Length: 611
Image (cartoon, rainbow, N blue to C red; front, side):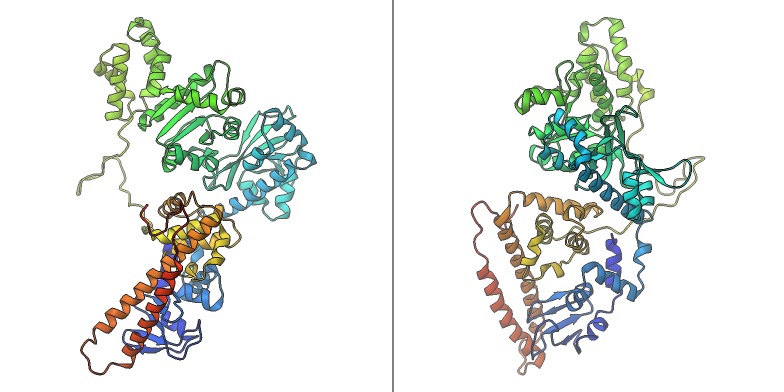
């Protein structure tokens, strides 16, 4: 993806007057240049180029935009092609502008996409019958299997390797961990064989890795997972997040399980705010992912055996260190979430979640059931098991509150409990910067600060809603008679829109967008959550008209400022007469656009209303 700051650099370097003059005869008019609009037939010039602000506009047909927009509209180029053509012309190296790993990430994405489709197709062919039988034995329906993109890797050694080789991607597949190089001789062989394939997807829905469950074979571990890559970081990835995100936002809560099939089974039964770990460790990265999905409460739903109880202790440290509001839902002895939900259904599981107890209460009660009445030996044994938990708590309020609660439970002084484990405490999360003029610590080599990328400004709210609507339903873009898509003011939004409408798929459009942009579009998408079908189309048209009205008002303001300087003059210049004539046309156009805006259907919030 082209970095936004490079698109901005292209726009700043382009001589807009020189570019437009290749196709339009322009004459200087004060600080601007004017000519006959190339986008509609006119006798009186109403097309203006404003070099100071790097944009053009036409009072007659309402066309406006920057250099990229002009090339798109006049030459019929796509946004990406227009940017690349202008970049070559003004000497901006877009390839060098991308971070060193951008090309590799793109290769990994293409290889992973091909593998996901390869596995998915095989599951529903004759070769996948054993895998389908296994899914049926676990109660997984065909609808659920397709929703999670499940697939099948046959026993053949080179099924995927041959497909990648034919597509010219085998080296990319090697980097993605999809194939291995043969120890002897040339060639590659598949990493996943005789396995039901579970795609691990980014929150946006794109496959980034795979888990494989051994089926009808005895060789190899039961589960095999992709190794980490530039595309896949398991410490920042939660399985099922792409399916669970909307429900997590609705409930402001998430259910955390440890197994892929636990997560899939819960989703099938309607508990759609469930996610699973892709490893045994819970990290701050996972908690950030949940935080971005607005999860304010986390339910731990782990196996009802000794391993499940140990897992709670393992997860308690990072959760308590982050101050997360976590609860533990206790499964019956011997149950796992998969078997429980199949037996008790969603109603039974919701009851279990309702009865969940706070994490600290669960840990104290599990490790020291008798509390203050426990023997000295029992207390010492419990404290020993709590050392790994307390060692992860940073010095500060969280740590003090933990030892206060522990003191109240076991009857030992909080200060002495903390003192006994003080050497285990990690330093504060944020290390204070040295004061100005203060030398670096002894033995530490001074380091130059890493260059920061230019800040990304948040997009306009109406434009973010426009893009969110197109991401949900790409066909809407053809209903945009005002060509808003050519004139979005934020380069990042235009880049996202270009990816969404260029055949790459709407779900991939935000994959590498900047977090600032991603948050704005995701927030807009949530605002559109209730709009479907004709209601969404009506809302989209309202958006187009609202943005159009704003443009008209901006042009009216410009004319007002320009003509006000001539107040009191007896003879108006030809230019001022034209502007006043165009003002009348704009007011007429504004009236027509306003008349097109009808009240929204019941239950639909108009785009100009506060949210």
